[in-house]
Length: 213
Image (cartoon, rainbow, N blue to C red; front, top):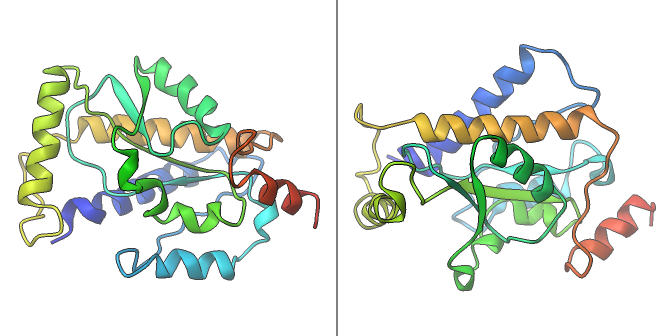
């Protein structure tokens, strides 16, 4: 159970961590964290935000990896909370290099940006990116992507039937994880400090944190 939500996310974290460990080492340190009890109220990530292993003001940015639907490559990447931070500029660069475009979450009214683990760090001012696999599939377009997503939601999401199957097409997931690795590597290899966009609710918190207030 939980093969997609969230064993795929954990697998993605581990694969990216192994790639970083293989080198070369970036200038900044990189932290990989798997937190628990999201469904019970973001308990693990909330604890992390209140008890960070490093000062939050020293974290340049973070990437949230939640459940990743096994699917063929898509032409888009969905950004939950689209327009929130400078991290999207980095995402756009690597997405376009793979022939992808950024798409805003089509159901913002469901509040997904506030329901996944990244929000605990966002509330402390840390710029966070939550990008999900696309739905506009290279083969079959949006109709095929919608069919895959609707089938998972109706038949497997939070149910015992969320199990691994040998028929899974992991190619889209592999492509997405490669893009997220590239984003993390760029952040860790420069002296840049991404921030929330002007007017974002977390911008003032980040500015005060970085100023040492």
